[in-house]
Image (cartoon, rainbow, N blue to C red; front, top):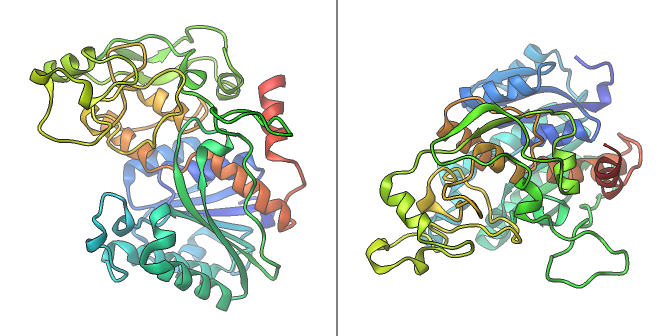
Length: 391
């Protein structure tokens, strides 16, 4: 365990480790990650070798049992983070089918029970944006009430990952709680929309798709290698940042497309989608972005666990007739290139689709950690600038 006890972090429902990656970048020590999915934990353990990896069902593991296993005492944790599954509030669930007692939402309550037992200095919970306003904010009120009752000052809001340097429009709800303190704030955006004129402080624009992936080697659908070399020197600050600790490209294979899938993508130009297909190639229905191709200039849409399937969203490469590789997906989710993913292509897609973008997590954790007095003051935009210029 870390000697800096006040920086110890426990990541519940950690998945492949997106929040932990952000916490580590912000200066925290990852004590342990816990998730029920073994392949998620394989990726987590590969990338956090000094942390304990616990593959377990939180509903069947008491907080005191986990604490004993980790040798963490009550009140010792500096940071407890997690994104408890809350599928009952997903946009894919019809509003009439959403209700507070949905068993798919009860893991949020389990997360709060762990918070009550461990009593960390800071708590950060992430979830789908719909959860915050669901049922006239009834769930939000329950969460705030539970944390406040245990001595925490609570702040909550919905943030867009693109506003914090992630090349993806991804809106997520965050609940931040700090013990024995006035309520802290959420971080101000560090990036502005590309279509918006410059502001007083000239904050950088949202990172585009090509600024994120343009230096990665070309691959045909169904091809690629486990280890490859970069196609060029970094062509953007974001690419330079992504390559900070890596001299090669991993997880860069393109999924093989069925003949009809390939024919549909080949019939489209960048920026086009399902509605632009010729009549003989159209499907009877589907998502509005189905078979969509990205453009170089756009900010990517929200990555989902179905990113491997061209019919589930706008996952078509802007130059090549194929869908995104997992490395390209990881870049769009703001995982750096030394972060490796374990499992089959579909398993990796699930890990990435469910992950919290590390850059977004870092922005929140750094900002809140400074307000709570756990880490020194350094603005997140200054951190990004240092990586972009000096690395």
